Length: 223
Image (cartoon, rainbow, N blue to C red):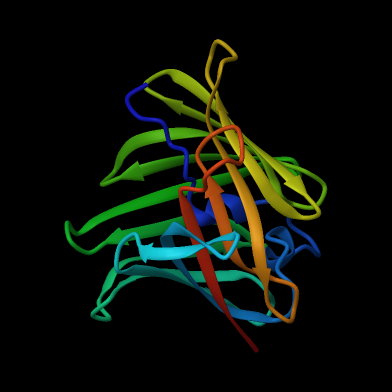
């Protein structure tokens, strides 16, 4: 495999079941969320707890949702206010069938195409400037949450698994063709807003919660 695709795009997380479940439900977001600003920091230890320290880079992600609770657009924005990258999606019968992601600095556009096989499976392929980069399939539980993703790159396959507790993702890890487990990430949630949505997430890049590498913060705006 040339490169393992571990951090999957937002739309792939959201291309789950059609019907009465919207994207906020799939992400366990409570209340009429309008937008979310996410920032990533290195961690620092203060007064017996891990907290956000220095920002990893001066970029934040802004995700927009409509009044029906579905993902509309996302932006990566620099500290000077410039849009560095943007994403948008096209839907058919409520399902995301195509996402376009544009990176400003190299003017590169990638498209992810999705096709529903069943309520539990969505096949996808990602193309950049018309060339196939990788393909695979997402598998979902009855709540529309992604539980595994099969990624095929250069005829080699990797499976990424996602584990939840009380609606929140607490673990993700890769499994290679030999069944060997690699690249584990653990997630812990330390702060929540008045709606019950998390506002601080700690990310551990090992199979035990010893020292978190990153802290992700969220600022949520509601309709």
